Image 1 (tube, rainbow, N blue to C red):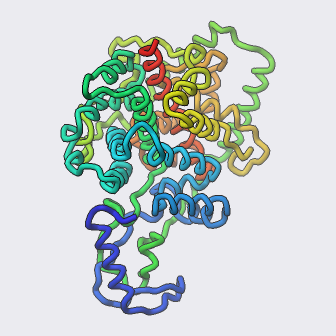
Image 2 (image 1 turned 135 degrees about the vertical axis):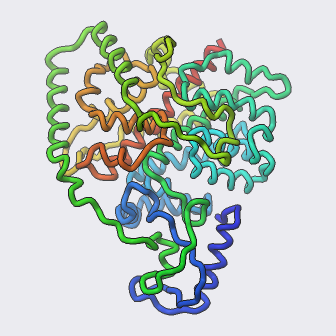
Amino acid sequence: MRHAVAPAENVENNCFAVTRLLKICTHCERLSKKDLGVRIPRPLVNGPSRFIPEKEILKVSKVDPRTQSIFEDAFAALGRLDNISLVMSFHPQYLESFLRTQHYLLQMDGPLSLHYRHYIGIMAAARHQCSYLVNLHVNYFLQVGGNPKWLNGLDEAPQKLQQLGELNKILAHRPWLLTKEHIERLLKAEEHSWSLAELIHAVVLLTHYHSLASFTFGCGITPEIHCDGGHTFRPPSLSQYCVCDIANGNGHAYHHDDPLGNQEMCGEVEVLMERMKQLQECRDDEEASQEEMATRFEREKTESMLVVTTEDEECVPSRDISRHFEDPSYGYKDFSRRGEHVPTFRVQDYSWEDHGFSLVNRLYPDVGQMLDEKFQMAYNLTYNTMATHKDVDTSMLRRAIWNYIHCMFGIRYDDYDYGEINELLDRSFKIYIKTMVCSPEKTTKRMYESFWRQFQHSEKVHVNLLLMEARMQAELLYALRAITRYMT
């Protein structure tokens, strides 16, 4: 796919100029440039991620035949392969489900027009200042015939889309504040009204891109070389540089892995496994009362508010990003601060399995099923390993991560002992989780590196898939409950 702005054309023109005079690169057996004084685009960052060494991602995608097949299908459908897919390729089963769902939401028959879908993607990603996703969907929006004037700012878009701004804002940052009155204002806006089917499609897109922004920041996803922010122009280093570097992102100095990375947290995995074993034994020996379980939930919910993200620094969005949404100062705030009291969302009263799934599937056929498969895939995905240990049941750990995220959103599972969370998730991990889920634009490489130091990058990507899907489901639960209350 060609980029919609000038840098892509510069890349193509320069590549053509370079290949007119040829010599063989002895390193990669491909063509390299002679000393022509041509400005060659250099990748700003090696590989698809700032956090994960490029060689690890490429190794996975080259070896696994299933991943190769998924990549080919994605390329055939979109004419491109983005860096999000490359990082997700650590988990091809999930990647397949993710791409199938996203393809259906964006390209198959549905209540919303194609240009509306991409504009909503822009609005959602912009709330978290995710320029990677914003630029991606600006290009798609223009390709499907969207009006370029809308890209000047939300106030240039149709009134119907502008009215979605409030829902976008609340869902992204404080979904527990969503009420049936918000839904009613969208469905009864006279000539600018949304239909129920359109609103469900919009809600799914908003939650999809809010959570995908979390994954993008949480994995340190970098722009592709042909995109804004993906390249720079510098005088070439003639002795070491080859034109193949444009494609594989090797134009920089080599990575130096931290030789102390696995030593500093020696025994971390074993300690975690021992805690899981002890918790399982406690489960078998005694079961806490419902009153005690409720107390532990409230305690964990309160403690989650004490987890601070990067000194609570403010991230001021650029004009390019902020023009796509309203009220830039509105962001995440813990739900019990400033005297607010938000009733606990009890899953037995409104759950995805018993309520949300059927509502989505009724108003937007097949999407409920696809979302359900994607949620289940992320939640149940396991290779029965932890770092170098094999034959490990990780279900307790996965459930703790999922339920901690829902706890931060005020969602409680009556059958879960929230005391397990503090045993299994240490403070550095909680800081990473809260930042990535609530304020993903503040996620840093140091945060990524500070948790689970002995674990593989593939395991950390799996964690990010869990965080992304748990967040999306939490947002969806609040939105769908509000819609259900309006309907009844």
